[in-house]
Length: 80
Image: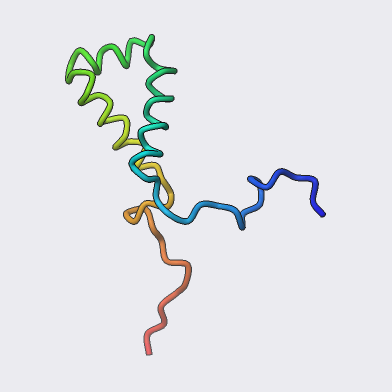
């Protein structure tokens, strides 16, 4: 039996994209950490808080390795 936490086991890796609810939580956490930064304040001043939040969610979704646009085949096609 391994003494490593289960989240280190690659068999437990997520295989689906983040849901909207998960993206909401990730965005909320990111914004809470960034709220006092000049970059966040500039973005909110430029596009408004709601649009800035959507930008954060889009960027987080784009970084999701399981999002379909980031999908890479795990096999090689062979021409016959």
